[in-house]
Length: 100
Image (cartoon, rainbow, N blue to C red; front, side, top):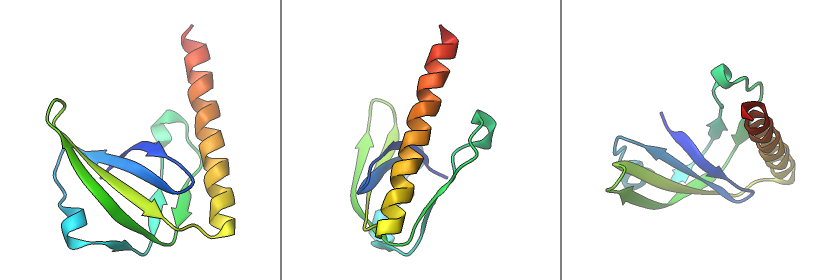
């Protein structure tokens, strides 16, 4: 299981406390599914067909492994990614407003 640090139109940065050694064994990804936690009130998901691991880094300070994934979205997937990002941004903004 990975957590998402950042999502953009061309890739995402995911992280884990466990070194999954994925990028050493898997270079090409045939399917990526992003399913945000339903506990946070998320009712949306994102699926992308092709991608590849482009980097792996380790943050010693926080003991976290980061994996950079670059994907090649179709036009339809690109539109879905933009909608996904907008929904997440709105959700985060609303969450911040409620705390105040």
